[in-house]
Amino acid sequence: MTRLKVDKIIGLQSVNCKACGKPMPMGAPRCAFCGAENEAAGAVCKETDMNKTSFSSDETGFIHSVQNVADEKQKMLNTLLRKKGCNMLLITDKYSLRYITGFRGGEGLAVFTPKEMLLIVDSRYTEAAKEDTEKAASGFSVVEFNNDNPKFKIVAEVILGITGDVNILFEDKSLTVAEYRNMSTEISKAFKTYFPQFEEQLRKSSMGWYPVGDELEKMRRIKTVEEIELLRKAEQIGDAAFLDILKLLKPGMTELEVAAEIEYSLKKHGAEGLSFDTIAASGINSSMPHAIPSQKKLEAGDFLTMDFGCIYEGYCSDMTRTVVIGKADDEMKKVYNTVLKAQTEAIAAVKAGLVCKDVDKIARDIIAAEGYGQYFGHGLGHSVGLYIHESPALNTRDETVLEAGMIETVEPGIYIPGRWGVRIEDMGAVTAEGYDDFTGSAKELIEL
Image (tube, rainbow, N blue to C red):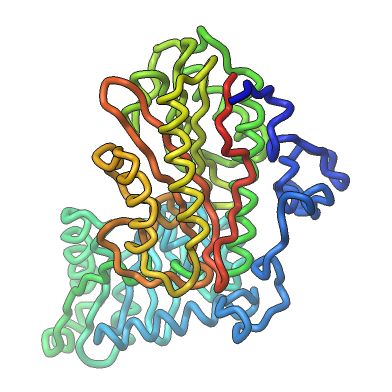
């Protein structure tokens, strides 16, 4: 294997966007910053049907019209209430709040019933919440709570509008036991304090609390075309950061310095935050899949695994590349190429209609056939969206059938304790015909 120079790596050559002038990987279909199409991408990347925003839902199976998204979400919530036999949903998780109401602040309480949709926030967020809900056309009315108009008094007023028994769905996966107890206690207190005249009526009815489980997360599984484009742009920012870090890597640099440079580059290229803590693991540390960057210095002959992601307009990216500092020996090349083959063949197999665990098996069998099965312990991939780890997952247990519009990472790895490890990860969208890979960075073994 010949030693590669950074500026000669196929798929990693950068070009400047003709519209805004900012750099982007040659293989990227469009600029991550202004959205302009990349004229240089034709040789290495083809546009897919996922990029077209004029399809009807019958043609793609996606919900993608901005005008229809809010209506579809409301229909799904009403269907969920009927399915669970409930008449109120309390939304507290920050990702659910963002998805359903459009609110980006994270701290709030949304109340949904078949008749009312309220987003309750304090004065720190009132103005921003109104802007966010209007932009998302979510249909939620923003109500500010304060000492004169407490949060659970507002909730109690909504409950008074419900005829008969009150059955409340709550987000049990994100709400702690203490928060749940406090919420139910405060609602009862609000009735006694502000609506004592209705106590007799309330005693004749019942109030039940029911966990929503993963139902709201399942709503987020199928991404809209707009969501897909945001996820694609987030991943392109990661590609740009990978280009940057390759120019800086050298022996003597610490893992912490590598992580810091990646994070700076992500922000420089337009990221609003990190989707998870950056992993930069070299040499013996690379045998730990989620190693924490340390003061260890890069040394000649080290594998260096870099797993990083950013947030763009609320949506996450995730990618991993493993490079060699200096030259790789024959066993390092064998392990790297085994992981690459496993990833390439799994990606080639992905398409709507496949079962998640069957995709995992493709990669796992390839690694096992080369004698490294015991060194691949984690799942092949996971979904990504507003949160970095969403469902469904590509692993040995998940029997979910993949659908067009789902986002999945494909990230096989081999980790030999006490020696080193390799992981390669792309992120993309499942389509009817295959996998729309958002990650443009080269995957051939890079020796620096």
